[in-house]
Image (cartoon, rainbow, N blue to C red; front, top):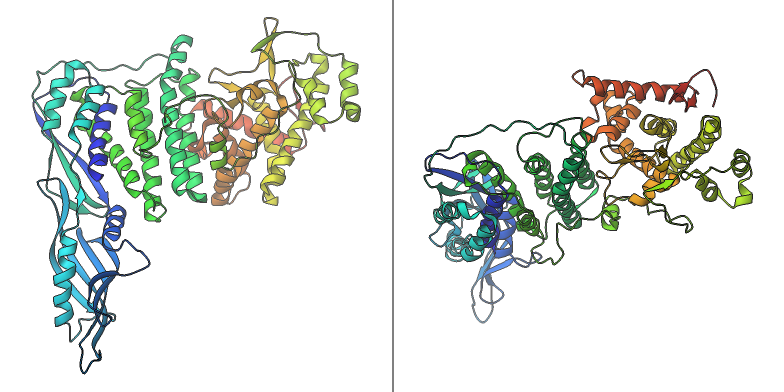
Length: 629
């Protein structure tokens, strides 16, 4: 029911709201619930014309006397709702036992509507005016009988149409009670009991039904400003990550729901951009590079992501992609819009953001689902990979003893043995076997050349594999072949493992980036196997190459094409790899931070050195342009 959906929105948003009490005198706030034109059109079309492939029978008396309506449409013109429909009429009479046709008329009708909400919270329409015209768009000479039939049969049917906005009050009150603290329960009940519908209005988006809420008087309290926090310590970081898990699970659930309902190529790219943008926002905080902003970080993430998600859903509506469940997505959009309104206008309600609130909001998209939309784990999510068209996961390497999180440093294989493995691969079956000798290898200075050759070979193989799989435009082939090793060098100096006090473990940044390609576990949760990223060098390299290819084709090539410079493609691609989709043009901006400029310039220097045929120097993590590799 539409009632359940829209009033559930109000309940959810009150539960999601989090802010310190800022109390003042009683005030009335407006919660604008917009019934977008696409939903109104869908609803009235199903009501008047449930069989899309056949006209609606308004009147029928034998084969020669009927009035049919077809192609019903609701639209907004000059901030006024209008309804139009094709009219097909045939009016005959019997004479001498036969049915001669007295009138056979086809045309259309256009009605000006005035929407209102009645006492039972039913959205209805008054017909203010109507105009009938023939197929040429002009008022016909003879329409009296047709006009009379239309007014008799179509007008009442349209005025009987309704959308039910009446709430299931007991369910909503019970839900809000579960979200509110006991101290705020009286105020919450009083606010809920005050809900009324304000005067309706129409705009370019549809019809706005204002829900008016009166927040009762409360004693004024001193408002304490919130100061920004210092960078988080290790214990606080762990706690922060736990708080954010429900948010990330919520976002993945919403994206997968949308992906199952209306995704095409363009929407897939937009949803992918949304997911990564939200996840990349966490990294500077986790790395201790920026302080945690004042306020609720989960709420801030929601507000920031909402604008992007809202545009994606609205564009899908405009392109008629959401055909199966438009009401669910309209409810979801209204929820986010109302959240922003309440956040700005009524912080005094003092509700807390809870996992139950996010869970209820997610279930507006799949109300009959039984799975927990906030379920969180670190496993590979096949549905997520399939949605974004990732290549199938490579098969695991042959079973070995499981690698612990850190292992005692073992004497590495002798230099002669590793050299033999490298030069005579057929003796040891294939490249996969050969590359396993890299596992848990922290090269000494005298081993750097051999190590460089093996890693360089794997990087090149991974780049070539991605070029072949993605059918990359040939003019970007060489760029990608340089991009992969350059990214690996600036990210990790081609290192997968480090020795920490006699313990060999995988390279890991404070923000959770792993291994040689520094694949961030938070950004790429669900896409890659974390254990394999940590302990399998080829797997880590392949994952990084896949990510770089996606960034190149979705962001880097677009920036290069817009600026007419192919050299912008690798720079843009690496900026996204380093800081997310919003950094695609970072290297071009004058207002970038000094750190960002250093990172972008360092990458460009390394890339140009590799492009010029320079040799990777793992002792300096740089390029020696005077030596061929």
